[in-house]
Length: 133
Length: 140
Image: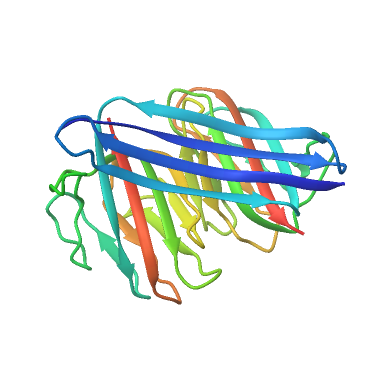
């Protein structure tokens, strides 16, 4: 079984007034035709939720490991920010609320232990990680 | 001056068996912003860490936030997008000064993005190569 996928971020803003429209844009799209992707979903409260690789699931729902995690995406459905952080190496931290998706490069050679830390309330999270073979 | 725009993130992976796409995992959301303030900063960076300051404050590299019209603006932030293009495979980090709120990593021009609530007094990490960076910061 092979894998196919993409990570695309597209930020674009422009003026609504004036004679000339000024555009600010920042975008990237990377396609993946190899490697592995895992997904983790669950609930968390202000006490936080620690996630180890034992929770990783591939697209078919089976347990999977990533040899070389490289990218992570995170969405939290609460109205207040929740932070997703690598609590072992502390090399990256991203924040989400209202299901707005956050993405960052993570590049590590081991499975990170990560933690979901909501500022307030309870909610559900979804995490997707991709790693090279 | 008013702005409108969007930030879209689309993450999708699926298994393939040669002809069919099966077992899809996806995270995708596109947020439209009909108003607000957007700050943009793009430049070249050396290997040393440096700060990027708020409003008229000049960071260590002499740069400051400007809007689409080139005017200086304040730098509170609800969403931050960041990309770095240095040497192949060289990662650069962006975080808020004296804060554990976020720490974005970018490599090879791939955009990292996350939500935020606070100012955008930022620090860019040191890196083994020189390169170019771009920030887009949105505030309501």
